[in-house]
Image (cartoon, rainbow over all chains, first blue to last red; front, side):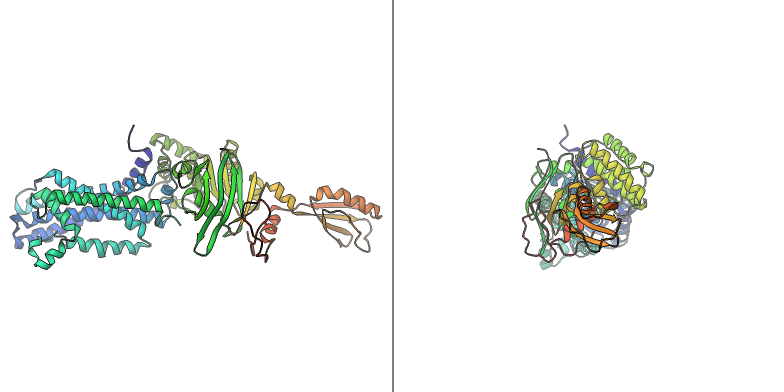
Length: 261
Length: 329
């Protein structure tokens, strides 16, 4: 007998179908964005920057762009799906069903994390095509298990945050605020496009409170084998954070936060 | 446990507004139960507490013996809900929406597809199975709401004003479907503004007002509480109102050659009226009895204590107990 109930599978299936059937809204934008990132930052600027820590710049930014894509899409999927369902009240179909609160959260988080991972893979593929064309060498995976583990944990963590955002939002502007004013600045100051050493000491210290730094660093370790922070520590902290966020999601569903009157 | 729904002292407050005020109701398994009440009486709040869309502030509520909070999964699994609002997933064709809903109830994909088709056939919109909800006509949308409630084969079907704004033909179709379901053993909880609907369909009716239960009775019992109008045409118009001695008679008036009396259960009172008039030397040549309507009783019950704010109630008695100002239906 499967540990995953039919009900949970049904909601995961619904959530996955929702983004798979709308590729122009879900897959195409990050693909175009990342082709642009690689073109501008990697190809044009990269030629002037040269290499960082012995790695060509276009290759150096690849892990950060993957993290950026995973985070943005995992978060957006969960927050949009829940908020749209609340806005149009069809989330009642789920709420009034016999699914447990844990199953509800599990479905939203896992489907959203999957979208994040798919986007991460797509970005890696864009890099795998564009990087050899630019620098003549391919993209390797120095520590594939770490790369996969970090991407998975990051996807779950931000899918979990997305659930919170979807429950918290009172209108569509709230989602914009979350994305533009919180997620994006954290990503851009998360050492995606530069090494921490490039910053003055004070800003380097400040950057260490940004969780993105650890995520980018971990994925960079997976792809390039270089890390500023011990990857096992980063992974453990992120995994702990993801578990805590998902547990809070379940608690919010139990409380009916944003869902019940 | 023979009760489909049981609530005790159910409370729900929104700040200063008391949406449910100590509501105690019991609905028997297999019953066709109606909830009547003016706007804001608390009918939808009551339903939403049962299905988990509203958190109660106090009291107890259970469905087939399962507490709606502690055993929410068991309770919700037994319920099919057709709400007033069109709260349907807009991303998918309606057949898939039904399959998803069935899936949430732990029904396998193969069976969910069969159930979805069956439900669409039942409500007569199978041809529209690949259409998204937004593209359905108003009547079809209402039919779909019932299909979605049916797809999990519920033991308790909750219909919140299912025929609001639909044409006569559709209303009768929906009545036929839910009557058949009830005949097959499904318990039905129906809220409606259409008194005729309650009168025609329900075994028992609860009248609610201001979050409280005013009364619970069968439609016939309720109508027996109202006064019928008896018009007796006399051969010769009397000079003054004849003296009538019958405790059931509320009033007697003259309207030209007609004597107009109001009385509870007019059919039983009429023979005595004729006898008494005959003793007074009046000959009755024609008689007409207008039965009270449930609508009149409803208005009477929800207005009875207008201005009588001191009428305290714990909401558990079946006696008349309202303090509703200006009820409207």
